[in-house]
Length: 401
Image (cartoon, rainbow, N blue to C red; front, side):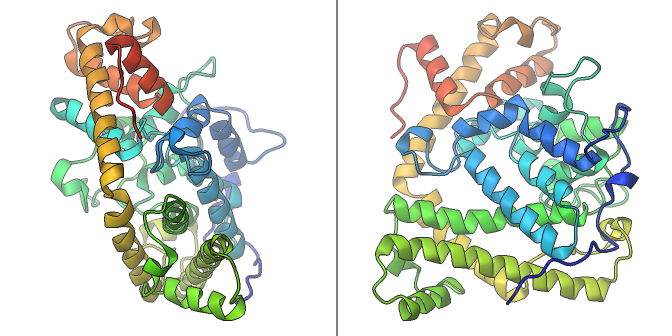
């Protein structure tokens, strides 16, 4: 189906009507508030470090596998495409996508599991909450405040991109029922209420589903490149099978490499078009007249159709055992968890092995605060730096291959 840009819709976010920033600043004369947020994220130190943080494969496994940075850029491209087609604010969609993974520690989810274990007595570790810490406290670039001082709309998108975290009474919902809302989020919201009970803007929802699209398509690409499965193994997956059949008919002599790229390209296009069509259908039913109506809705505005949602689940169900739980990946990630746990244990005993600016302000008797600060330091590491630190402190480091 042809995708045509449409005029900005009534439920898009308006940068001119932003709820503002925690610390008041004069407006830019050349950029909207949301464009300014995107630019601040791009220039942040934490954003640059994503270039050397694991997506699925550790950085030295190959130059062509995704890193957190290349994944983030791909999510951002998809989010802008969706925002443009749906008449949303492209800059806010971009900011939501650019910042969504800033809180990931080294070694991807393996590093997150390790830090969560190390902080079990101090509230645990959640990469989404860590993203909020990065953009509100840990980035120190400006003379008048810590963090990036992003707009309320960008912050709510980073925190709530998976949907409401509480009900209107403040009780945790969905996956937060078991463990509660991360302390970093509740503490911040006590000062700057991000309304955890509501959905985020349509732009943030576009950023979130772009993450799913990128994961599906590009993890298929990386899995094929790593020879964890072949193109023939994908036959039978909904949508994917249809695309493979189309390619076989239209390009019967295409080589396997180009066939894989064509599959990924068409899968992204098919999913984007599905989201555009489904979102327009929901907009007709929900008839949100404003961004506030999108937030107050009983269901998300942006999403897959039921058929594409089923395809998304099938693709993830395929990738989980063949890629994310592949024995080689599990072995490497197990070793990576050990690296992070060892670093945390060492710094807990020898905090002066951390750069002075990370511990001089702490009360030595405040154990939870010290543990959190150590986690902040480790979470900011790249894969490479974590391995260098481990070698420096212990003399040898597992070969994560």
